[in-house]
Length: 329
Image 1 (cartoon, rainbow, N blue to C red):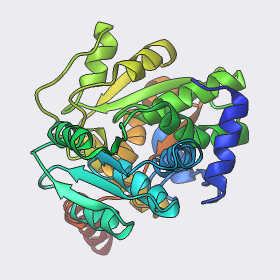
Image 2: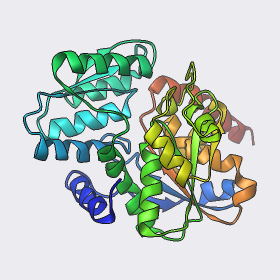
Image 3: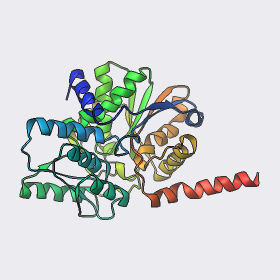
Image 4: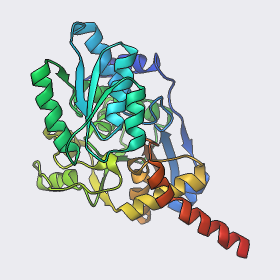
């Protein structure tokens, strides 16, 4: 899909808009895991999530090669849309983003703040995506897929940063939504000639990639009801699946309860806010802790854009209970 020189150029494009994100070995997370837990903090980007990297690389090429494009249009549940809106605003390109009804209020506000024309349509991502594709044809706009070579190359820059900083990772856990993140990790690892095992993570409530990985072909699901909306995918991208099947060792499925516990662990142990998909890598590692004991484990914290209502639901009651027990002691 790209070579190392192209990836390094993409990293320079991203670097013009934001600094590298940190990667820390957190001792309390490591205690929980029984392994060295190294977190790549993609929650520390201008949009609060890793996908901004892909948007910057995509719109940079658009600006160089297709400068007369009338505008961009895409569909999202949040982070992809924020990335395209942020990059389009930086390059002064008009952008329309479709989201499903009931989408994250905070993410919708952020996309509008980055300059997107936001349209609500349908009850899930797939419905919003199909309508955005239809409007693109009617209005002469460029439809930005959630999985595209430039997006993959852009998000692969976080893997380039991580794997050059810490070259002896034994295993790297990566959540899967549309697949750009895990594909970027696989491709960056291979370009650097490393032996790090890459493990994908999906929700038990949205297991389309996990089912497809096992079946060897695209398997669609009828619903994607996970609260970890960054992993809510019903229809896997065939190109992404091909890369994942070739380069990932397996896909672990995690429950919403496991994800909630991982969100709380990030909050209490590192004081970092993780959205559901962002915490999924740690949830999967905890599920497999018996098999990774003593290893150096990479965890991609893909984003921190969690709704306040979900934050209250997942963290505050547990935190209050914990505080109460401390008082009693």
